[in-house]
Image 1 (cartoon, one colour):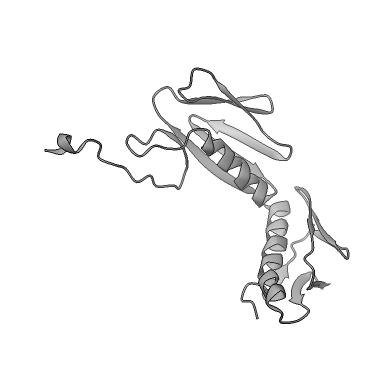
Image 2 (cartoon, one colour):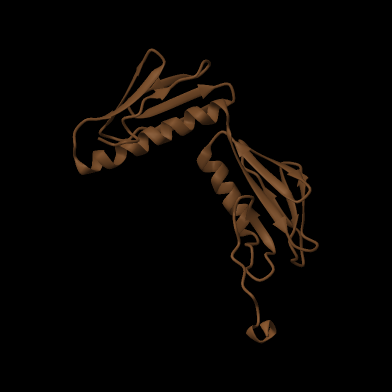
Length: 179
């Protein structure tokens, strides 16, 4: 039995779940998310508790069991609390500003980089910190990764865009300088 898959999912107040044969929809105070259900996995709802079970012990169904439970749990957390990721911009002259439905980044290129945020994702800017937030964990992580990919942190001076909790391993530079 999957250690993750066998855990029940507690449904907070204000969250409704609709289970169709091929999709599952979670609606809460922050919005609504839809996910297709994986074949071989059964979802049951009783008294505000959601349980995920598999039909048999086939290796394919065993692999999907914990995944489906984790996806549904992330949807429940997303529509109640939401997800966010913080990014930091380090470097002389590197700036970021909110502009309409996107971000305007000055990253040392000959031009400004305009990043358009997809629907359902918001970004707030404070000094050189960007906070990306939304209800879909996957979408928040993807947008944060795309922003980071615009200028990855380099190992010598640490210039670039990094996650707030990321640790950059620094290099010493030229070996003749250490003497």
